[in-house]
Image (tube, rainbow, N blue to C red; front, side, top):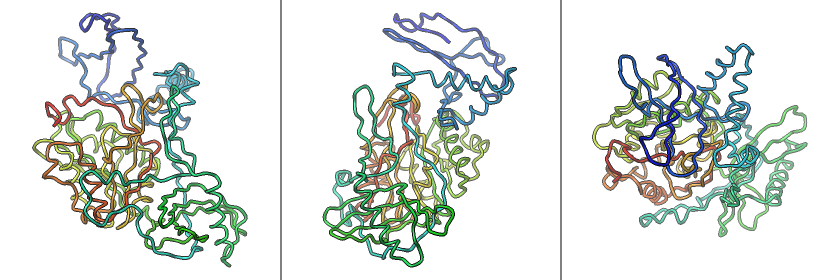
Length: 487
């Protein structure tokens, strides 16, 4: 490690001792630095076997130390295993691991104390894996999408007509940081929640098959159209008479304007058996070695936490030279993945469209994602609940971190003006004819708003929400995609 003074690069001091490394092992390094004025960096150098001099380590050999373990610390699962091994080899048992995790928790970037860090921490989404029971107690009704446009949408105007949902749950999207408020999801009042719950309870108790002892709202989302009424995704926990355990329900319901009776939207509904619906996560990239590993580890975490074998990672690679994407996937625990190799200049739109074209089943969901993300473990299941065939897609908002910050030491804002993460059924991608590859060839920026316009013009509603745990990391654009400059 080398500290640089404010006089500029080249005036090196405080070199660490040489550390011997062995091929095939991962190593955890912890740096604690303090800068007053001017420029200060930390540089890692190594000397490979047979080399005469130390050279800077390529970025492809680094990965961030992230993700949530059982104790609530954000560490990466792969490195967590290594830390556990380290701890178990210590003479004092597992104390080495415990001390390492505690030391990580006390490293605070941008906050004056660890107490404030705990107060401001961006918590992860509740990722319970539960069984859904269908109770057919509400009358059925037809529903029309709230904000879709079955006609031509002028260029880049669709975003103005998107109204995010209002929610009730353990929502942690409102951030109060250094006396600045970062607006989160709009929250339903307890009075509104109680009104909806009472309407459902009334319908349930009218049904001769069921009697409830108690019930409560686990999660509630409302999309309101003042001209016609409100649609809800209503998720309840119910204790029925004569049953030992609570059951959990999840269904889309509708409350017409002026009505006092909820109805089940038979033409706008997700199926609790949707865990059998394939979800494809599609990303396009070139020469993003360390971020490729980060993506694979993140998707591994989703798979290992849920056991969900009905989703697939699709990577469209424009001839990466910094690592073998296929080898990284072969070495992973993922059972379902695909690498599509393309030549020529990098095209985000072209790559994503190639991934969409790879999917042949019209009853599968295709979700375009971005690099530099961390997705919460419940992300795939959440997609299934919010992508309705022929009716609605999902375009979540993510939390954009500022330079130098992570999920545990965070500082950033909710990104509300991008639609790069975009999910629809494959049949609906086909209906709206995908990305505009004539306009967005080797340039990117604007293709997300264009695809939103096309989705709305095709008559699809887009569900919009700040998705807790969906985080985007700051990154340099220098040298990305193998281009000298962004076009």
